[in-house]
Length: 383
Image 1 (cartoon, rainbow, N blue to C red):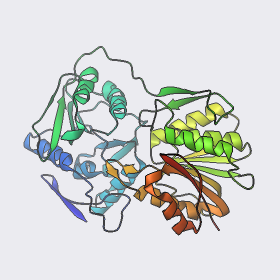
Image 2 (cartoon, rainbow, N blue to C red; image 1 turned 135 degrees about the horizontal axis):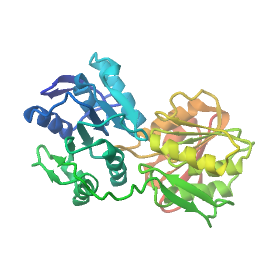
Image 3 (cartoon, helix red, strand yellow; image 1 turned 90 degrees about the vertical axis):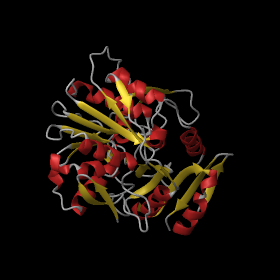
Image 4 (cartoon, helix red, strand yellow; image 1 turned 90 degrees about the horizontal axis):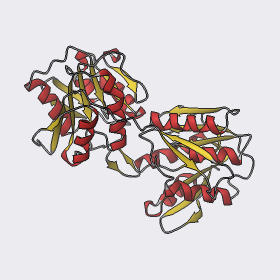
């Protein structure tokens, strides 16, 4: 367990989900810089505070005495916040959590923003908070210096007002933005993407993509290869009645699966609230008479064991800025639990990631259904 030492106190913090022998911290130098600046500059924390993109609740835990609101698109961040509040004997009610599709309930006095990896996400968030800030609102953003670019500052200047940066400390930097009267650009999100003339579908679909959805402006090549493969293959020996789109993004994989299996019940799962909502919008637009489930959760947490005939998975290979196959491995383990006997897990992934070995070790079998220079499509059956 790591200890965050800040002017506000010492806090025991963990990343979520907790992994054995995890050497990564639940905060970074930008979190430390923000907390030190609040203390050194005696920034008032007795008003209405909004904390955005607090990956594991480090800032929110340290400032829980001020009863802030934490806004995030991540189910994992929400669970990390709960875990770290409990770890530090802080009542859960001290911090109010709202997801990225919600807005504050009243004007904001202090806004703390951890700069997200996605420029689009930051743009949407600045539009989201703009009606709740005024000339008296203190706005402080922070990130590691490598994540702050000229276009980051321009975004603040276009939507909020005059903006400047701090000196770098431990490779972290702060952004200070003053609210000004501006002619605001229109919020472009969600984006609309038309799927037509695609080999993998018989229909023309219009997709709605929130700002934090992967490949929101075009069909990503991994999903396209996956769907082309599913179109050509018999994806289950019998009619699949229960299908899970795991890590669903905008839900396009589950959407096409629903086309193949008109009697199936679809369940769209992702840890991003924006992804799950995009999948909901897109499925209900395409199949207004059909029911489906839409769940923001950690991989397959909360899904019933032995309940799915088919799981379709295009796993991510990073959590925030940490790259690795740990999320994919968790998805594979939980898929084995959720699949019925004889049910199949279909996975698309970069060829070099070696998912074939992991699936064969876990499931006792794995077949490469298709492959090209970049991707492979794999199938593993629960025996």
